[in-house]
Length: 161
Image (cartoon, helix red, strand yellow):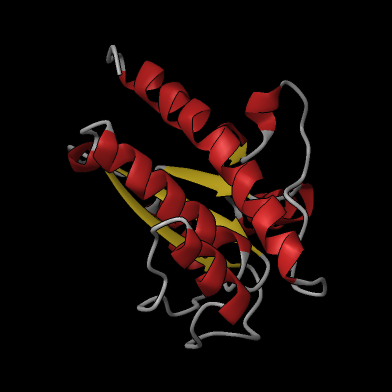
């Protein structure tokens, strides 16, 4: 695990234009509200390279804006095996992304599923091929699990959180 006073947390989905940038923004905002932003560095990436350098999907941008989040500066990037050592924790949006991370060499104990805090290992569905309502549904799934994710990380750090 990289050493530092803060932990690097990477949210991962397939193309880094829908789910993971939204998750990153939601958890970053929640961490700021809880005065934890100095303890973590958040980013997102995709396991695929199709969208590298592009902005977030316009439907993600619109959904984020409705809830006071700004994805306008997001640029998609890809994670590869050589990047694994740079991150303390990986938060996969689905089991396929999780398996891709493990195949790249991410240690299993440092790969989380975003929805695992619901008590079952459910995937965050990819809204890319659906309509705008799918993005809103994904936003609420991510929001529902963001607090639990921060609680989990804080417990590991030994903080009252």
